[in-house]
Length: 177
Image (cartoon, rainbow, N blue to C red; front, side, top):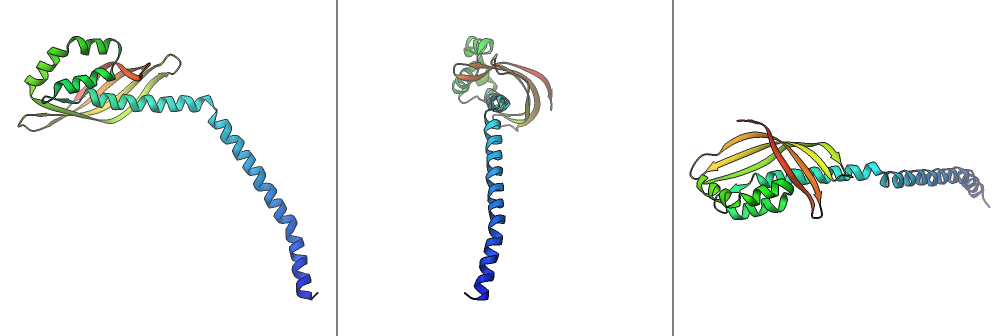
């Protein structure tokens, strides 16, 4: 055996405890991170956060939908409204459907909306109820005319139904041009 191979073996033996210690640290770190991940995943706060995000997404989508009116196809728009609302709001939409179709056709406008910002003011996951506040940009385009844009602030109540979260009520709390 040469001096070179002896010194290499000695260096390998000296590195072995350091590598073993490094491997042990990696195993401990993986175990700690895995335990933290499992705890975080099963934390009830994570479920509430997911519910909050889901409800906010539904509220935003449905507020845009109920502000979308096209005089060329009012029945389709009102049909979509009917599917996205519940409770007194659904009863009101159903009760006034014929009158709403006539009013929409007579107005001869196309209305579109987009959410500028929205947040949940209250979330009661067990009760299946939430309150959302939203700022909407609503654009109304009359037939052959120029579009006008208004900023609208709304307070919406969202209710969990067997079909998912739906709007139960919508209150306009502010408007500006």
